Image (cartoon, rainbow over all chains, first blue to last red; front, side):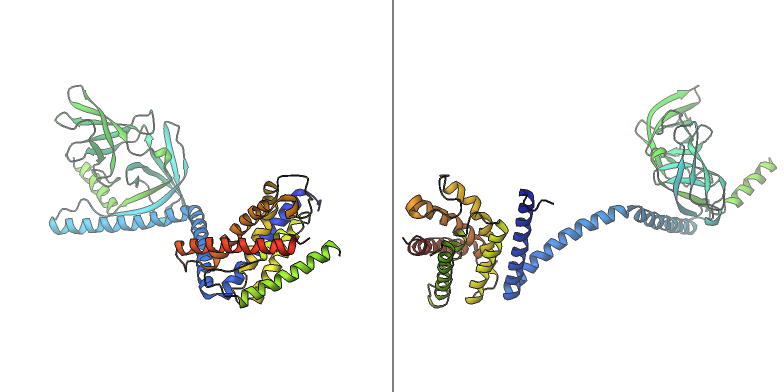
Length: 273
Length: 169
C-alpha cells in the first residue's frame, strides 16, 4: 500500500476523525447524566432501527417455515370447523351425510404443468394417513385426487387432466354439474350437464357440491364467464378458475371420515339394482 | 526566535488565558469564551490532516480538563473544526500568493478576511458545542439566542487575541 497516496490519507483522516468524535461523545455521555441518557437513547433508537431491519430480513428467509406452521394450524382449524359443523348438523337433523373431514397439509414437490395429463407429487404418504381416492384442495381450488401412495409421498392426478371430473354447483342454488378442465390453460374449466332450468348468470360463483366423497362442499372454485345451451337438454358453462394449480406450492389432502363405509354402501346399492 | 518555538509559546499563553477566562471570568450562563478555535486555525496548513485532528482533540481535552465543564465537549468541537479549517481557508483567503504553511498575517490579508474566517470556524464550533451542551435541555429559541450571543462574543474575543498575540509585529 502507498502510505503517501491521497486516498490513504483521506481514509486515515476520516478514520481518525470518527474515532476522536466517538471518544468525545462517549466522554460527554460519561461525564453528564443528562447527556448520557440522551445519547444512549439515540444509540438505542439506532440499534432498534437496525434490529427491525435485520429482523425483517430474517423473517423473509423464515417465510417457508412460517408458511408450514400456518398451514398446519390452518389444517387443524379446518378440522375443528368441520367437527363443529358436523356436531351442529347432528344435533339439528339425524342425517349426517356431510361427515367429518381431516385436513392434511402438504407441499407440492413436483408438478407437471404443461401436459394434458398432469400430475403432482406431494410430500405426504401412507405414514401420514394418506390413502388413494382422497381429494386434494386449497381454500379456493380443487387440485386433484390421490392416485397412488408410497410410504412418504403420494401421487396426485391433477385436476388439470382431461380425465378428471368434479361435482360442482353454482353458489346459492341447488344446480350442479360436472366440472372438467378445458385443456387449454390453467385457469379454464367447463361446467357441463347443468339443468336447463338453472338461472345462473355470468359472474356467478361455482363451488364444490360435496356430492362425492372426494371433495368437501362449498369450496369456491371460480366464476362463470360464458353460458351455452347444449342440445336443448343441458347447459354448459365456461368457468374461470380462481387459482391456477400450476402456481401452487401448498395444498391440503382431504380425508372424509367413513369414506370406506359410504363406498361400500354405494357398491351394495349398485348390486341391489 | 524560531517560528515553531514562538508558536508553542503563543499556544501555551492562549491555553493559560483560556483556563483563566473559563474559571475566573463570569460572563453569565449564556456566554462561554473559547479560544480553542483560534489555536486550531493557526495550526500549520501543510501538516497531515490526521495530525491536525489529534492536536485539536488534545487541545480541546486539555481545556475540558482544566475548566469546570463537560469532559469531551471542547475536544469534540475542536476535532470537528480541525477537519474543516483547511477547506474553509482556501475560499476565504483567495490569493494564492500567501504562504501555504500558515494563515497569512493580518498585515498581508487584511483584518476582514481573518474576521470572516473566524466567524465561519466559530459558527461550526458552537454548532457542535451548543448542540451537545444543551442537548434537549434547552428550547430551540434559547439555544439559538445562546448560539448567536456566543458567536458575537467569541468573535470579538478571538479577533482581539488574534491581533494582540498572533499578529504582534
